[in-house]
Image (cartoon, rainbow, N blue to C red; front, side, top):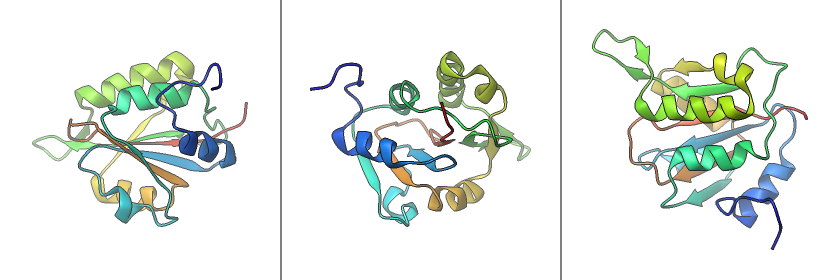
Amino acid sequence: MLRGIPFEISPQLLRILAEMGHGDRICFGDEYFPANSMAEKGRVVRADGIDVVTMVDAVMKLLPLDHWTDCAVTFMGRPDETGKLVSSPVTEKMTETIAKYDPEAAASAQYIERFAFYDMARTSYVVVHTGETENYGCIILQKGVK
């Protein structure tokens, strides 16, 4: 047992977070996200039964975000009736959670459409398949330093 490690962080995920370098990305997918298809590097961590906000909060306690990029936080945007990408209740909760640890990164978060998100997810170092049941509960974080 280690102190200070959130219980949502499995030993597998802890190892992967430590392996990640500056600029590497971690993708969190909701229950409907095709995690295994997206994980081209073969790194999928199951977080069944844990919602995405809880997982993001646990990871943000350990992971610095990248301030050498325009955007270290990327959400899968939900299209409204006009096609504009908008937030959802779960993305708003994730933004609030990220802001507790890194207000600047939360303020510069971007929304991208589903297939562009899939393309970005395929380049991620790891995909965490959460138990989030709300649609569009998907996010990518880019690791920074300190």
